[in-house]
Figure 1 (tube, rainbow, N blue to C red):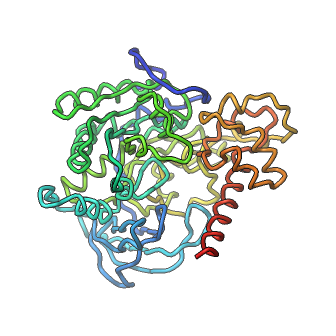
Figure 2 (figure 1 turned 60 degrees about the horizontal axis):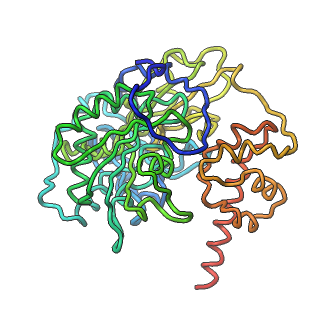
Length: 453
């Protein structure tokens, strides 16, 4: 269904935000197709926020599809599994999508294997809460919305706090991306099942699924399945606005509450997770399949055949692009993720990792150098900021290197949605300067903490 079709019922939203052109119609109608197995896979050990995984295999070891090949390197870390039957061909440093060379495991695929996994459901009744958290960590599940934060850490509700509401993020507000859209349309049963599995250990009062109104088919599909559940699950249609998918904005839109500065959703009794992440939860506990593949949107005006593809983790991006017919002669830039928060990619000789939500190929007419002018204090960035920050003032402080003064303007609350940069008529790269400032402030805080101990 084209993204020009919208849900006709009541919708909810937050104040401020921006309205970039959607471009969803390029791939929103493309059903999920499975990526054929390739000859070799490269699996970085640090695909998530936190400590990298620790390799459990050596060169020459035979591995099976779904076998654990690396264990968690700490609590804020997850296990890593082989996406195929094959042989470990190398353990070393490999190019990563962020431009760095990082430790990883390379696996040569067994060409004679059927690559089928036998289903091995996990007995939920035998697991207490601690066992459930450990199982999620062992499954290698991380947030699939892009941040790749270890899911078990989020599910481990700290003592003294409670989860009143489970909230699923099905907004996918970034232009171009439609992977979550297709997962919701094609796999609503697994998403609802994932909510019920999670709630067995959280004991929430209710669950919400927030979906932007440009996905009416997803709204209806999940409503139909949710209506069969004894546990109250409400599907909420949200206005099409960026960054509606930011968890703080979704909480405001659905519950009418604001997450206080410096606090987390759980401080309001809310646990937020991506729809794809919750589907992965169902896949693991019902089938025994760890996180070895994910849906990726390959789209843009300069890709020949836009698609939504279920890609084994570790597949080289160039192989995925080739499956889509390659790029056009007009291709000028590659982004991982969407155009608002995505990162420019210089090479396709890197693997798809757990946080790869999309590969976006833009044409020459969409990529141009913008000349930067002085701030004219027009206030457009202030009107756009969903957190009611003052990007203009923070930009001026950043330009002068006054990092500490930026704390007075709540720079650490910024989640780098780039709405300010999007609307700036002077072409000031505000969000980039905020990233630099936040990095400096985090390093400074870490040094001070180390010196005080």
